[in-house]
Length: 77
Image 1 (cartoon, rainbow, N blue to C red):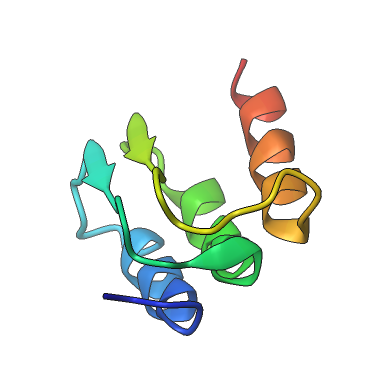
Image 2: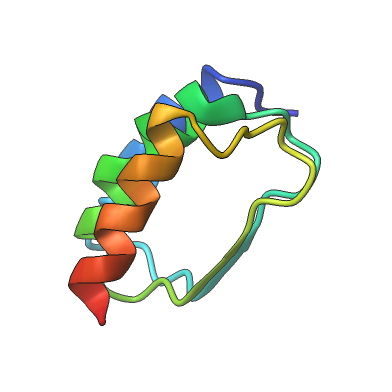
């Protein structure tokens, strides 16, 4: 399990140009909104990632991380 602190580590991994992950399943890792927010910079920089499953991560719709993901999705459309 990654918990909130795992968001920083995932951000660093996802922003690496050597990473070619197209699908990332993070189901049940309890990232929370803060962990998701910490992941946003790496997700934003990753040009290959196409699908992320964030099911069962205790993320509430009003948290900062959700707003970060919304901004990334708006830019990618």
